Amino acid sequence: MGLKLNRRNLLFAGINIVAAPYLGGCASISSQTNEGPAVAITIDDFALGDTALLSGAARDAAILAALRRFDLSAAGFVAGKHIDNAKGAEVLRNWSDQGHIIGNHTYSHNYYGGRDPQAMIADILRCEALLQPYAGFKKLFRFPYLAEGRTAEGRDAMRILLAENGYQNAHVTIDTSDWYIDQRLKEKLAREPNTDLSPYRAFFLEHIWARAQYYDGLAKLVFGHSIKHTILLHHNLTTALFLGDLLAMFRRNNWRLVNAADAFAADEFKAVFSTIPSGQSLVWAGAKEKNLSPDLRYPSEDSKYEKPRMDELGL
Image (cartoon, rainbow, N blue to C red):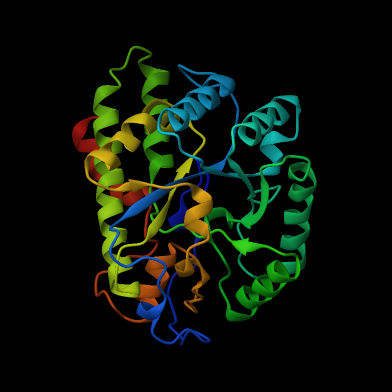
């Protein structure tokens, strides 16, 4: 997902539900049963341009400092176009040296509709060439915009190509609109450089907590229990400013903080669903395919859901 692109305008309207190819009852897929909810941090894109308040390097330092405070290993999903320079190489070295996963998010960060899987895999391999030198690089791939194909043919072609190239789909389970909150904050700072950050912090935490509870509820429907979640954040100003507060909030509310590698190794991440268009949160897709929740919205997260409340609050 990107900061300026509205996911609703990108995604294909309408969903055709078909049976999962081989999973049967997903509630039987279990890597944990009684431990309660847990969350791993995953951070997308790595756009490193300077913004109000913090340079790209300062944002990265703040994100890494928050992760160190909580002794947590995250996963960064890197769009190659953002790090194909000396500044990007330094950021990747820091992430790798500090024990974080570096994953693939394509080079160009293009939306995948399913028409040209060969072009998509070529873009993935172009990014891989930049990431391979780092010890933290793992063959985990996350689709830009969480868009995995508008057709079954396009979806399945990419699944085959990813497997042939040794990649695991690095699913999101807790989707968010952090990118939109970040966009609104930067717009406000451009108008009013001395803007009070506390209302944005409060809204950010309220939003993340609401989404975490919602998607954990879907996980319980799909798998029969809470899981080790992967939350979607972006390498942006709000993450730099508020990640420490977010981690403290989860811990305060008795969610375990787990390393990203542990989450992606969980059995639940082997689940394969056949919703069309393909993508969104893994647990959203499972709930949609099995018709487990009557109120699933599509896209599952978008600016239109947060705009009225942010407008009301003057954010």
